[in-house]
Image 1 (spheres, rainbow, N blue to C red):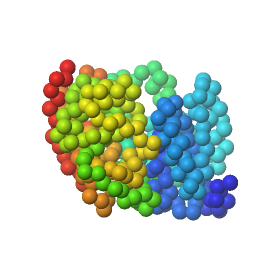
Image 2: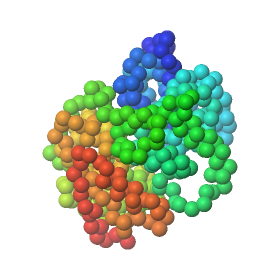
Image 3: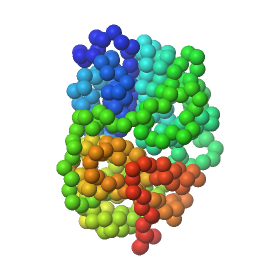
Image 4: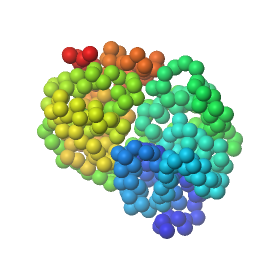
Length: 357
């Protein structure tokens, strides 16, 4: 039994689907619920790299005294029904629910079951910025990179559940809603409590890191999500590596094996598949004195995790010419906003991408 399971404080149930979400639950627990009973439910995805990072993060959570429950939530057609059925009793008893992805249909379904009076949303990367804006404007919850237009058949079928989840995430006399985030929040909805995530747990637990002389590049899954053209992306990475003298490329967990192989062959970069979220990898070290990234979550989180070190975080803008025909109409503005709102980073202009198709 977890050392905290027998405590008499309010029971907290957390749902995570990615390593970053789990990290941010640990950060929240470190600052907001020391000594409280926390049960982490991992709604496991299928992707092997994500599963591996989640397994490692689960070990860290157990070392912190938290209970971890691993659910094969996508392990077949019957898995969702078994998972929801098995969690219903816990959901109805929980006084506080912490979640990492309010856009997740799984999480939205679970929200319709809970009676918790306290709901906490921790960061799922830059998507948190979009969630807060949509909640404030009363819009339906939809990920920023999805193409605009009419909802598809699955969206229409799921619409009542999504609407109910959005209502649950709206503060009322019966429900408190907190957002725990390292992202800039400019239009938080009325009644929502916003608390800053400064990565205090990460800085206390790891580092400071040993610094190398060169630079490291941080990968992104913008090609995999259909936002950025693959040839343009590869040419930009090649140009950045040459300009900054980078030798390593830290892959995003969603980057395809084929793209990473091509990057290694055509750029000469060492491809690193991290076993933990990059904030922890960088804090443990060794890490380059300069970290170069495209617009993504890490341009907000790495300066916090690496506070007090000599590491410089630089972000390279996305040239609109790199965007695909399938990119959402909101993509250009959203990516520019991610970069513009980042604090403590050095902003780079979009690099030329010679030789791109």
